[in-house]
Length: 316
Image 1 (cartoon, rainbow, N blue to C red):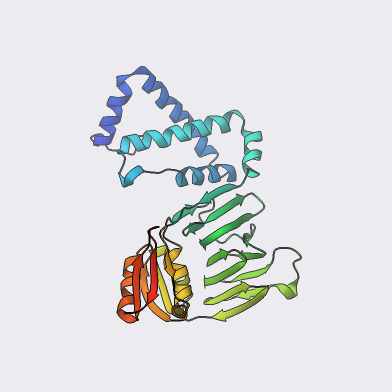
Image 2 (cartoon, rainbow, N blue to C red):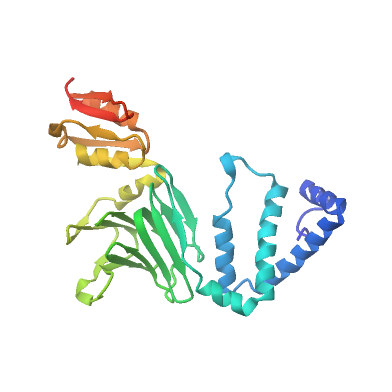
């Protein structure tokens, strides 16, 4: 494991000191060597690929602090040893269980974002207050967006279709990037690159399948489905960079978008303000800049109530 390091490498010297300090450490290292040899022999097995990606997605460094290299290496090695011993001792049955393992649930709280690296190298980025169920197997790559919004960047694999179910629609992709949003019964699918097809969750018929091309946005609301063409569908995924892009939006819709990222919402007290048109680029979670822009551009008065909400009323 250390053969690739130079003799005078500080990390190697530190490790040798740790190994010689306690016979238990030396024994643990020998177990790791044996385990890694078994891993290399099984590296191309799909269950092991899935396990490795799952391990990487679960490594969290608290408070943004970098862990010492030796401590991180030991932690990863411990995960690999435990996983490999299980695979070596029960390889046939364990591999079968991994192939049909229970779906993984990933979710975010209000204001949070999360990027997941999937078993095949595809990624799923979750926006605020989202919940995604991931079900990978030898036969397919299935996602279920249970709420919120996610951006998928898909590695091409013709043998295993990549599908995302949101509400009563299913999106099927092969090597592409697209954004899916689910708000109650409202669904939006924005295609950034590649090609996807969208059809009903149940009762697939060719006449009901819609094929999207880059910069197409499919919208489902109140039982109606339509596709609109936009200049750049990437604006629908601007949240990944922490931005909200508003283009001549009604104030009531703009406020609803701003509120997705905060726990202290903005309220519109006067109905006549609802149809004001708003444009601009704002940071997610930054309500103060949005409110300041309203005060500068419109006859809007801002106040806070006893519940720490920002209330918009008419008046200068």
